[in-house]
Image (cartoon, rainbow, N blue to C red; front, side, top):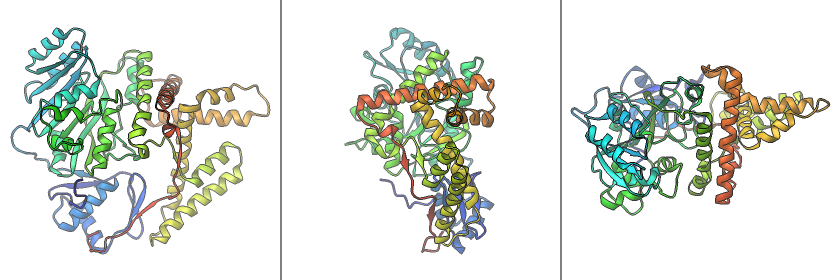
Length: 494
């Protein structure tokens, strides 16, 4: 395991997350999951230093690590990276899709070595020709084993310090590797991912993907932590230390020859990248999501293709739950926020009001016990209730949409309240997302696509659960702690 006490290096700066708020006593509230961080007098001086520019003092370096680890702030690496080209190899797995491979290679060829792994393409000569035209090496697997097996085969042939994973349907901009690798000046960072965006959204399918792509994790920089706002990153485009890969590969100290075969779990046809990211996290490494770097990728061409992909992604939840059971909760509910939402859905306004007050008092009591002012408690309670409503709606849409639609379709009568509640859960998340993202689709098309997307993903999760004989991916979790309190250090440094 890497040393978690290593401060953020000097020369780095930090920028506070947009959601981080300073309380009246100088404490900070924010992060994912939400928490309050108390600061000593020395900590407040260190925060002032960080707000003024790059890290200069040991105290600021320690506080910067605490803030970035908590998701309250994000590191700003030095603008100048190492002189000269990086020691990196680009690894591209491909099966068929020679046209996309040509386009991808045209975007990356010439600066760094490229290894293309042909994972059993029907026409090997097309892949070989595309690679040869752009000076890329080719490794051929006669039988396709999926992305995990293909990447493992490529890793076994790579000895550079860094590896840039890239999918063949991506068209990265010039300088994407260098921009991401700046974060690797932090010795605890194992991997850095860009934002994956939709390439040329000219169809309704692509426009929907642009607004809600399954690989697009949003425009907010983040540390990647299971259960947080950015719980994983895909290897569609990812720059990673080869030494970190070796560190999480059982029984190996380097990635030479056959050692590379175990980095990605070949038993995982989907979700192999999530498994790797979570293993890196569990080993103490930091993983960063840097959305200022954007890598376009090709979206599915038709609605059936998009929904079939969502189903396949859903099937990965159960195998991942076998490996990381604590990371797969589909819904996390705080008791008072959950009670408030259920009371509102059941048309119990007095009970809903009581739940709202109780949520507020619960948060206020938790922070006051820690000696922190409760001035942010009302807003935190309302945010928790709103997020709980949206979370229950997404959960119900993914795993119980037929029941909700049957309730909405019931004949008029005394059950009008149930129909309204069902509609709220079924359509609330979609319409909220539409209002926030303003996609290039009308609200009806977007809401229908959003619902179909959730249903197909949820169906895939159910299919995986049946195959793996587990219910972890469909089991909600109750969080009894309304907010975390990060206490000040006793060494005067935070």
